[in-house]
Amino acid sequence: MELYFITSNKGKAQTLQKSFEIAGYDKIKIIQKDMNLMEPQADTVAEVSRFKAEEAYKSLKAPLLVEDGSFCVEALAGFPGVYTKYVLETIGVEGIIKLMQGQTNRQAKFVSCATFVDEKGNVTQFFRDDIFYDIATEIKDKTSPYAWSELWKVIYVRENQKHLCDFSKDELDEYYRTIDQKGSLQKFMNWYIAKHLK
Image (spheres, rainbow, N blue to C red):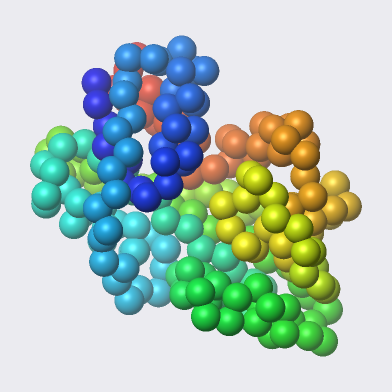
């Protein structure tokens, strides 16, 4: 059984493949495909994810998955939200730290939505539960080999009392184990197994 994962991030597709295998379902094959889909101007990550999934389906006419995410800062009324990628490419984490000057509420969260389109074009969406972080007061000048975003340099995990970029491989593995069930991809996988593989 094959499932297209529309993403430019090979690591994300490999992680999903491994998650299925760990769950005991090694017959499903995740095929990573980068389609360079247009990012629509939309207010929510769910709208962006759905649009891209439906556009991909028009070309592939096969079961596929798209996941989109955003970073939302409470003190900035949820900004940058769906514009996270653009903000990081323009003002960077330095700009985010400047925007946070004088703010006492430094809470932020990642929002993600996984959108699945089945062989008939039916759409189902899965959302990440709220997991809150703090925006650090300064940028940590360290690049983690495991980071998927520059945001790791400004995200402070209160429970571990360190920046995300300071986490060791073992600490990251343990951290992901505690939050995995709350993620949009994990929720999709659990649903997919129950609906299509059991």
